Every structure is written in C-alpha cells, then in structure tokens.
Image (cartoon, rainbow, N blue to C red; front, top):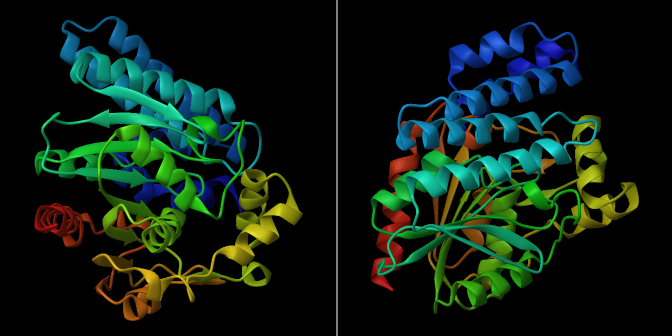
Length: 328
C-alpha cells in the first residue's frame, strides 16, 4: 500500500479520533512513505506541545496537550517499526491534559492494564471503554465524552498489547481476566463495557465470562476471524501485537464467539457499519442474534469504527449504555 493510499484509508478514523480533517490532510498528504506519515504526525503532536507551553490559560494548555496525545497515538498506527516512543508520549500528554482539565481524574493500573478513571465519584454507573488491536485509551474521546455527559464514571484503558502497554505485553484472548482485574481495581460491583473493533470481541468475551458485566456494547467488533483470508498487512499488525506469527495465528483462532454468544446474560448492543468489509472478518450480526438479550444496530453507510457516521450511532449507544446501567 502506498503512503497516499494508507493516509486516505485512515481519514475517517482520524476524524473519529478527534483530529481536524483539514489539518490531517495537510500533514499526511505530502508523506513519501508510511514511515514518513508517522513522523509527520509526531512532528504535529510536538507542535501542540509547544502551543501548550505558551498557552495563556491552563484550559488552553490542557486542550493542546489533549490534542497532542491524539496525534502521538495516531502516529502509532503505522504498521511497521517501533512505535513505543509515540505511545509513551501519547500516554504522558494525556496525563498532563487531565491534570489541567479534570484534576479529579485518577490513574489506575494493574497487571495487564492501565488507564484513567474520569467522572463523578457518586456516578450512577461505571463504563469501561475497551480499545482494539492497534487503538488505545487516547483515541475514543468522543465516546468517552458522551458517556461522561450522561453522568457515568468512565475508565478508558489500555490492555495487553494496546497503547502504552504494547511494548511490554502481547494480546490476550481471555480478556475477561483483564476485565476482572479492572473491576477489582475500580472497586465497583458492576460495570458497563464498550468495545471498539477487536475490543468488541474482548467485550463480548468478557460479558460471557465475567458476571460483574451488567451491560455491553460492541462497535465494529468481529464475530470471528479467519487468519488465512486476512490481508497481509493486517496479519503483520497482529503478529507485531502478539509476539510473532505463531502466537498471532493461535490468538486469531481463539477470536470466535460462536460458543460465547449464548452465554452473554446481560443486555448487549451490537453496532455495525454496512461498509465495514474486512476480508476474513465476520461482522457482529451473528453475535446479536445468538446472545439472549442482543440488539443489533446496522448503519448502512458506516465504515470501520463508523467515524464517517457518528450521528447515526454514538449518542444512541451512549444513551443505551447509560439506560442499561440505570435499569440494573
């Protein structure tokens, strides 16, 4: 894939992650290679750090730090090379942003996870936002903000092989074990989960196996994945996150919700985009059909992660999760 094709393929994901589309096109448009694309995004992130240093108010400084975190994170999406430095910069910038904008936020970490708990201490419920294969806690700010506005506490996390933990851990198919440790650390009796992309599998698997999951929503999550049909670039990304081709094949073999779906006893919302077509990946309709309390929301024109269709699912999904947690 050429640099231009790669940059174009990331556009709706970039806008969904909060990057200004005009700025993204300017920054990414002149890249001669995918490596240069990543370097250009890192340089843009550093420009926002400089703006934060010269900001006239703490609010402006925090907002610049927050945008820098998104640019640093997005730079990690290049499929080749070591992105640990950019992931670490994204994590640090988000921490500085929250210290200025939401000083009540708490950093919580444990074996295989790290993230930020935001929102009121007396929230009516707690939601956990679970990222996917190459995403992380800095990406899904629009969803996090929507959940916060509905009175929920929100824990945005990196898990094994994700975000700031990608350099030191590998992906884990039995994600319910991670979620169990997260719930323990949060000190709550139950949580709602939202999983995006591969995070949708993680959330569904957790809802089937972790009894403290009270409601779950998946966005562009796979029902199952066939390694042999996956595009080569996606195989490479999975191998990088799994620690090699062999572990990657074994991990993908486990990504199959056929047996897990009927075990999901809590309310489940499955959101799919009709234009989300990845060879070898089965979208979520079978999950919604097989789960006892499953609901299905299909946005016909939505692409992967539905960054091109946020009005058609984001508010409705946030309302659904808040309502499901309130209903108990």
